[in-house]
Amino acid sequence: MRLLGIAASPRRNGNTERLLDAFLQGARQAEEVDKVVLTEFDIRPCQSCGRCARSGCCVLQDDMQMLYDKVLAADRIVIAAPIFFASVPAQLKAFIDRFQCFWVAKYVLKQPIVTRAEDRRGFFLCAAGMKNPRFFDHARAVVRVFFTVMNFSYQGSLFYPGIDWAGQIEQHPNALFEAQEAGKAFMQR
Ligand SMILES: Cc1cc2nc3c(=O)[nH]c(=O)nc-3n(C[C@H](O)[C@H](O)[C@H](O)COP(=O)(O)O)c2cc1C
Image: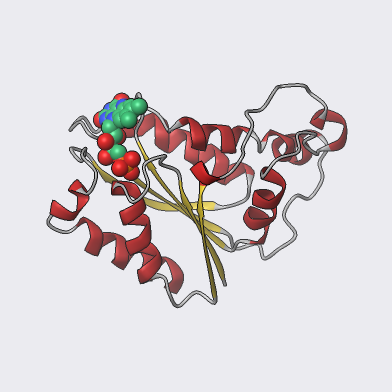
């Protein structure tokens, strides 16, 4: 069982990366755990050039080729992201937009895009500075579409409003415990 954890915040060791680390700790029974920090990779935004409409492949050459392989190889995926302007950070949006070639391959060219086991599952961890729970709606929708395109069923999410300064998640009475337990349950199902 291969688990891929994606840290989507540009702030290293911030609230959502700590949530992700707790989740991965809980999921340590996975045979292979891989953690990717998006801000450390060269990910160019989709140019909407349309070339993938013919081939199903992206023509941009950057770190996404390696990241595509990781996503394709994963049985389980967990994304941890903060809310930025009521949505996901640009790093995560750029990453997700680059899966347009897979959307084309799957829905237009009718190519099988994922050859690994059918049972692929995804989980979403998110924190936001403000206490308004509606801020999570857009981020959840973005991640859900990504999961759907890449054949991950949306297994669940943990949202933490009112968490702002770096490390504040440690003050939450049970967030890191919940994330760890969610990671454990995620691998057991
Ligand atoms: C550019 C930027 C935009 C943000 N926009 C929002 C927002 O729209 N709503 C909100 O509740 N918090 C917003 N925040 C606060 C972050 O969601 C919050 O600080 C979060 O805990 C950061 O998680 P991290 O430490 O994993 O980066 C924003 C922060 C930044 C830096």
